[in-house]
Length: 238
Image (tube, rainbow, N blue to C red; front, side):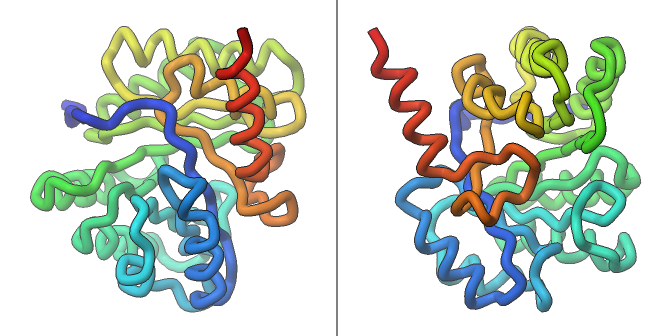
């Protein structure tokens, strides 16, 4: 059964940090701490990935991701090594840890069990499609798999080529609301840029931004200052 999540309101802005050097990554994270509700550390981008230095230096909630090559990331180690770093993040009390839906269920269970013991970490089970947006029924099946995986939060991100792709993904928030399962859902690509803003106004748990335009970690990702300006304009409109 999915784990319950309490006192985690929707509408968070997560800034993704993907640098090779550990010290550079820490400094980049510190530079956006006033803008971010959550800071994502992309362990797969680091030459020497580590958990403890970030936990010691950075106050805002941290999300650790170690994205494999087979899902658009840079980690090419064994699955056991990749997941061991995520387990370290859970045991260290990170606010969030992301693991892919297509990882083996045993690894997902291991992280969820560790999170239930420390009662601090929320597990995000994610699914990405970098080429297209599947049909509605397939997206809903992915949602159900995430909800049944034991995760606290689901994440579904697809590549949009037209506005109908965007609508299908954003409509998943209706399903998430009915099922009381927090969901991160938006689209990549130029056509999907609007969804990165709109998802927060439609009940999405979180959206992602980059440190600046040059350091986007996915196609169509907005710089955090641009994202915040868009949200301000929306929320101040009468």
